[in-house]
Length: 415
Image 1 (cartoon, one colour):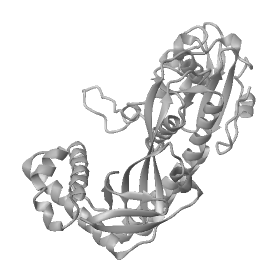
Image 2: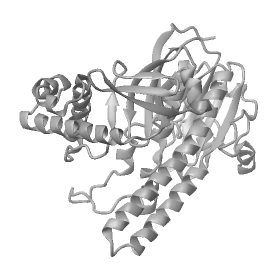
Image 3: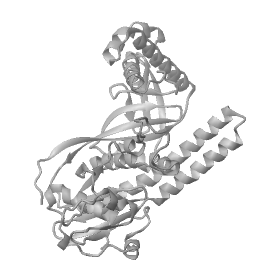
Image 4: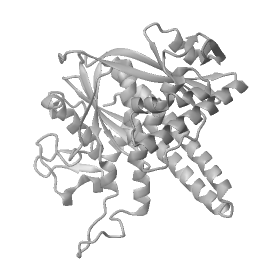
């Protein structure tokens, strides 16, 4: 058991509700978008970006819209966020979509009805359509309401939950994040077991939609407007399919960690995009026009959803109260967990599937070897020792295939 002082972390989850549309909703959303763009214009003209500076600049002008004063505060908050992103992305700051954001002091949510103010003492009541999933959040007394976002077809309500995070845990599960799989090592202090989660379905979805977009470009090359519409639809469908797989995998991963009272350890992959797209210098010191990697590999790695996968794990772990830690991933695939030997660039195991230590003879699948190193990093190697392995030889491909299973199935510990 690892005694750790408990820290309280506020977990946030957004839940979408369908509602019966009204004509007044569209007019309200259009007016709110005009207020946001008005605040953006005032911020660009005045050269300020903070929310309170925007409120001070446009408060009197916003009275002509005839809405409740809370709309002024929320519109300036949205405008400040857009201006901040504009300074970082250098894009034209403008709100294009119809939406409305309100803080928790503005609206009233009672079971199937949502009441929002339009003017002082004038309200708009929307009837929500509830399912079992939405009712579960509304009936939970431990949850508190946050802000809401209203669009033309749905209402997204934010729920907050204070969960004790960093409590005592009896085991540790470390995961090595790869393009086609999640390879983990579970340890309860006495034994070490292997976990393999297959993510090949995501790669198949990415490849299918890449071919589809390429066909659309050839088919609608004469009509750019229709091509943009078709490409946007294809991209949205791809994101929905990828998110569905990631939600299923991460939910069962966190459920497994909660049942075994284990801390989840992930590798910190920040900055990996710069490594993927890094260019080389030629003999004259100029940047090469050709990349050291092939275009096919570069495209695959740039569409790799490791960030979204880690984000899903992070907020689901916070919601369920599962401890989560990030450790450096540098040299995790090239280090021997048994003797600590670091392989050179010529012996890099990323060029082959099996890690072989030249000093002690340790042989293991390179993804599983990285998971063992992540497990060893946590608490100075307390959770990993080679003599604790239930299956000491995890080297050959037949053994590796026994550890593989469908990523949509519940991940189980295998030895």
